[in-house]
Length: 217
Image (cartoon, rainbow, N blue to C red; front, side, top):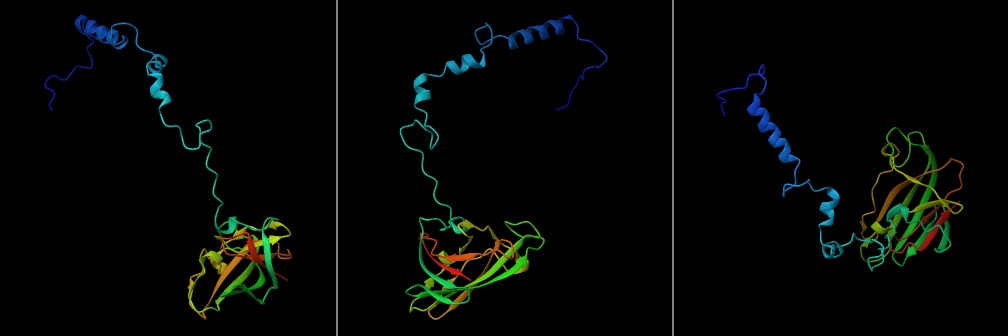
C-alpha cells in the first residue's frame, strides 16, 4: 500500500494527536468494564473448580487413584543376569562348545586384548577392551531366530563390564540373523576392561535373561 502522506520525522505531535495518544494509553490500562485490568491471579481464579478437577492428570502422577507404571526392564546389554537372581544352567571354557537349547549350541572365543580407535561407541578413544567372538550353530531341523541371543554380558566377579562398539575392531552394533538348520553365525563383542581382567561371558536368550550359560578361562 502506498503511503500518500508519510509523517515528517522532524515534527512533534500536535495537541490533538497528544490527546488521542493519551486516550489510547488510558484505554489500554483499563479492564473490559472500564475498571482496573484483570490480574493473572484473578484470571486463574475465574476458572471453575470443577473444570480443573475434571482435567486428566499426567500419566503416572501420584494421588490420581492409579499407581505409576513400573519402568520396563531395558533390553540388550543392559539386561545383565549377573546377580543372585539368575540361574547358571551350564559352564564352559572359552573355545569350547556348549549346548544352549535343544537346537542351538554356542562357542565363545577369546579374549583378545585391544584398544578402541578414534570413534568408538559407549567407550572413549584409547580405552582398553577385551574382544570375544560368539558363534551360534543351529543343530535342529528348523530355522532359529537368533536375535535374542545377540546380547551376551561380560562380568568381572559380579560386576558387569560395559559393552563397547568399534568399527576399527570389527565390533559393530548388529545382531544375529535367523540361522538355518545346520548353519552358523558369529558376532564380535567387546567390553571395556583392563587387558589382564578376568572376564566371564554369559550367553542367554534376551527374552528369558534369568538363565544363562557362562564361558570362562
